[in-house]
Length: 386
Image 1 (spheres, rainbow, N blue to C red):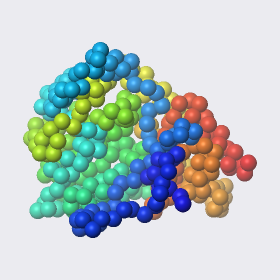
Image 2 (image 1 turned 90 degrees about the vertical axis):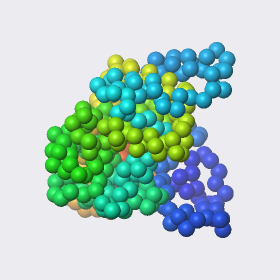
Image 3 (image 1 turned 120 degrees about the vertical axis):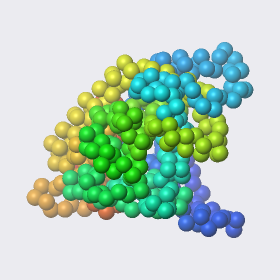
Image 4 (image 1 turned 90 degrees about the horizontal axis):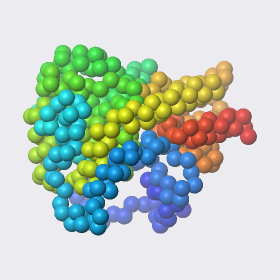
């Protein structure tokens, strides 16, 4: 019996069918949960499917975690700071904001969950809009919280056509760079939309912004209808610590604080707060790490294009591309699902989405130099029929 896509590789699964209880509420029956990328437990595969950093975090992060532990770990008996003050102050110093304009959550996914609950759930104003090809957690949040929503179709170039929303709508949320495409909108284009739609709440999800896109955080003080979220999982190599941030004017941030304090006053533990503070303060490490990843991303893009792949221009730490057979004649051995499976058989995990328009694309995380070269060599062998 095969494991489900959400079962960690190397873990035993007794059944692929979900366990159902008679005590489920109608809501639970209606949910279609987000499915993350496969996780590796046995360490035998090259994991390029969840956009983690190929490098360990800053040495200052490790030192901060050790300091937070103390010699005997006695500090762990105490509750953490419920306001994550040190993290907010470090982020405020970095971005030229005040600490009360910053919210800290248990990963940007929790931050986004609070955003959907408190700011995007506006039945009287209308639905929230997000791209049809985008972060697949958005519709999951809408189902969980009963948020009305509509999708905005990406254009033929896989860009988010903000201009198509030519009237005021209740709210719009989108990643910048977008995921899984990696394409980014210029800050000026986003600002023009925010300025021309003062009654529309605009949420920009900047999980990948550090890899080459322009952040909208500098616009926070100008617009009361703008909220920006970020993550320390990708560029700062803290996916295992779960730290997410939101930036906005005080009224928007207060909504998130109220939701947090009505749900869990202590979502960020002491070690995560120490790690996040140190990571935000070490800009030299960030610049070096992001620079190396961007250089390898460009090499990976060029290598794939030379093999006949269409690769979308990426400002993230991954590339998104599909193989285009010579002469345009389809080859069932080289479709997205087939290439995904072939790479897996070669010991490499990438991400493939069974969705219209993108089913033949592979999303490949930029790993270390050796990992990036391994995926290119594996694809060359696969295309050659070896």
